[in-house]
Structure formats: structure tokens, C-alpha cells
Length: 98
Image (cartoon, rainbow, N blue to C red; front, side):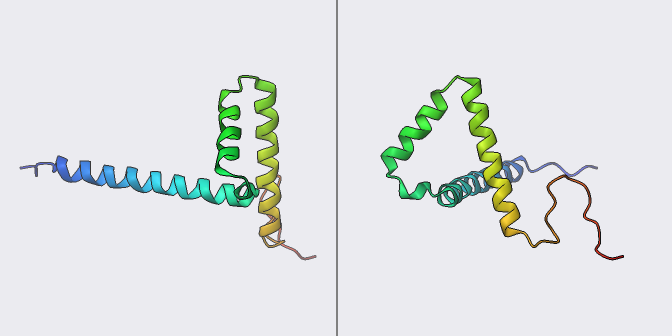
């Protein structure tokens, strides 16, 4: 005979996981603000900039912002990774040697 599922325990586990993901999302947003130097802006300035970004429907502007953001993350990854781990083209790293 099958054991009945404990739906309450499963629901609690899902709620805990959702809470953990939300907490991590907020933490990563804070880390992003610090990494970009935007922590030097006032909360009003930062909120205003985010509102403008969210309200912008111009696909060209949004694409340009996305490219600039991607370039920021790529440059930080290269700066932080040891030279042997750097790989910008997606190909496997080649071992050094003759």
C-alpha cells in the first residue's frame, strides 16, 4: 500500500524555497548596486533611474543598456578570474604546453 503524501510538508518546503530564492534575489540586487558603484547615488536617484528604465519602451535604448550591462559583467569576470580560467569564446580551455 502506498504511503499518503504529506501535502502540508511539501507546501511548507516550497514556501521555504520561495522565501530563500526571494532573499537571494534581494541580496544579489544589493551586490549589483555596489558592484556598479550605484551605491553612491541617493535612494531617490536610484529609484528614479530604475523607474525610467522600467517605463522605457524604446527597444534600441533597452538593447544598448543590455549590451552595456553584459560588457560590464564580462569585464568583471575577466578581471576576477585567474588567467587560466579566462575563456570568452566558450571553447574549452587548452592546456599550456608544447
